[in-house]
Image 1 (cartoon, one colour):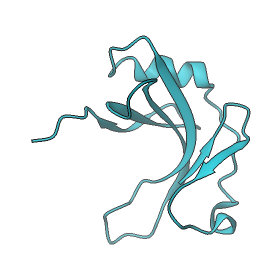
Image 2: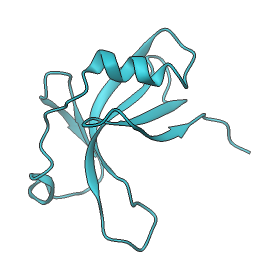
Image 3: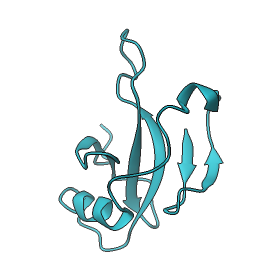
Image 4: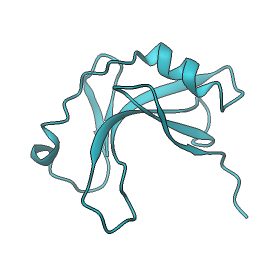
Length: 102
């Protein structure tokens, strides 16, 4: 997973993936960081949210081929959950994790 600052610069890389495999995705977002946070607030009731750009496989866990998209990963400033994954091109919520484990 690639983590980006709002200006598009790379912050860190987690997991082992080849960046050349995802060059076609790009790092420019149609949705601003502020807009992503606003969208996430429909699911997360916390005033201190942060947003990080990442690549996300929308087909992870399936037998289908990868579909990598640029997303905003939005979560509370002081916690990793709950979090919302928002498509950086469309603003659509791709995934929501409320942090509750049973």
